[in-house]
Image (cartoon, rainbow, N blue to C red):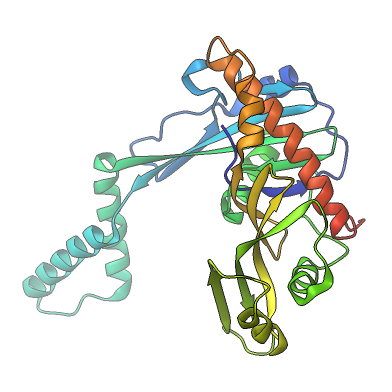
Length: 302
């Protein structure tokens, strides 16, 4: 249940549905198995999986939800191999070249033939609505997957006014300033990993790992005009992550202080354990996100 990545979406209006009311809404798009002739299917699954039936799980002002996506695995190599065989057979039989339009139609037929036999891949995407702070937080590093969840939530609820996170101060400018000796806020400690780009030269990128980011090598890149677009940091000895130019948090790790706090709850079952972990995680992430937003001058007002 512990989030491994984080995309932040500020809500443009108060979220007023209770966990029970949201469960009723999500029930209209409950997860179902992908049909024989479908490439994919989306729906809502209980955050507790097989240990729960509710499509929401609330702790305080936070409501956890889970999107389940099933996708048919259709290897391109298999499709192309069968297509080549059919095209060759037809060309030999009729003594002519098969046109592109015919090939496209044959490819569609092959995919339809293979769909009922294809393996199914399941992907779960967790998110929670923090109505106290006014955020939707999605556990993914993929903007596309987050947008799929948001689209499904909008279709389910009718509307969901939110925007991607936009900050008054550029994270790139601020992260670059940190490594230029501009001072890192006391809550944060710089790690040993960063990524830099040259704004004047498209595609020019430097990735550094296990390096002293305050050393001469990094200073040389900064002096040459490169900007920091990703940097590894640790917050209050509680959470480590890689901060990106979009203020996304990747490779989240909840460190010993938080794990010990979560372990103190005497959970009797999976639901209780989930409840305790969610309470600790949402509390700490709320504090961390507020620190980051303040660090970058607050959220841009629409």
